[in-house]
Image 1: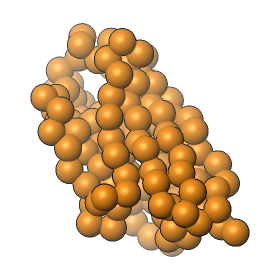
Image 2: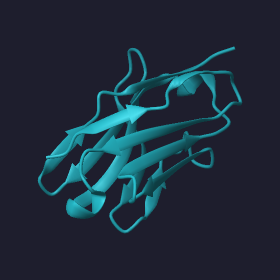
Image 3: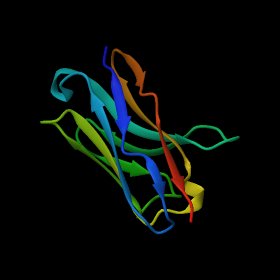
Length: 117
């Protein structure tokens, strides 16, 4: 098992930036990862996949964030990041970290991102 804790959310003006962090309770090297993902869920909408990183570092993004968001990881800190630039009001949502492991699927509790002037 692994516990995931997100941080870094908050209120930001349109055009601004935030970096979200997802800290894992175990070494990323010690777990068999399929993908590490960021999802988001806006009020009244379904949860959507925003960004994905495979175990070998390949990345993929939703069309709505491609070119503005970047997923990365720091193995020494057991942390996955989501850098969000040029934020728009429609990016407002609760952002969730997700690890899809061979042993199961694990979620953090989420962090709120609000983009508003």
